[in-house]
Structures are given as structure tokens and as C-alpha cells.
Length: 136
Image (cartoon, rainbow, N blue to C red):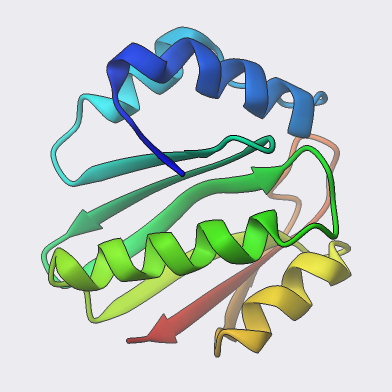
């Protein structure tokens, strides 16, 4: 795992584009996010990324994903992210996941995340987002 900062914003954008080709974020988006206080970025050399933000006692997983599925990349990134959130004083973590992304939802549930809400037509393709949260 590599802790990412603005110097890796281009790599994060490229990895994000490979994971989410329908909604890729550009270099400027990652550079801007990584410059914000409380934002933590992480890259997995196998082709994964995580971006989270901690504000006061809450954290938000902004994006997480892996180019190659079912290799433990997402699990490893989530472990690192949750540890980072705890170390920055977060007591609760939130995220949104596509309602139809059953493998990701199972992963989050395995870590103890629970559904906290639903955002209708959240994604550009019209899919709903399930809001999940975890008390650390």
C-alpha cells in the first residue's frame, strides 16, 4: 500500500478511470480532494484506490475500488482506511454504494456496515445508492 498525496493524483485518476469508466474523476478532482484537510488517499499496487475524509468524529469513504475483483484488494484498502479513520479520531464511517453492487455491499456488511438510507437515482446512470454506516 502506498499513501497517496497530490503527487499521486494522476495515478489515482488513472486507476479510478479503470475502475469506474462510466464516471471517471480527473486529475484536478483528485488533486483538489487530496489537498483538503482530513483527506487520506491510498493506492494498492495491484490496482486499487481509496479516498476518505475525516471531519471531527466522522469519516466518509469518498471512493474505493479495485481494477481486478475478488483478489482481496478492496478488503485490504478498507482495513487501511478504517484504521486511518480511527487514528484521526473518527467514531463513525459513512459511504454510498450502488444498490446493485452486491459484492461490495457484502464486503461492507462483513466489516459491520449497516444500511442507513437510500439515495434515489444518485448515480449518473440512474441507479440508487445505498447509504451505509459503521460505528467504530
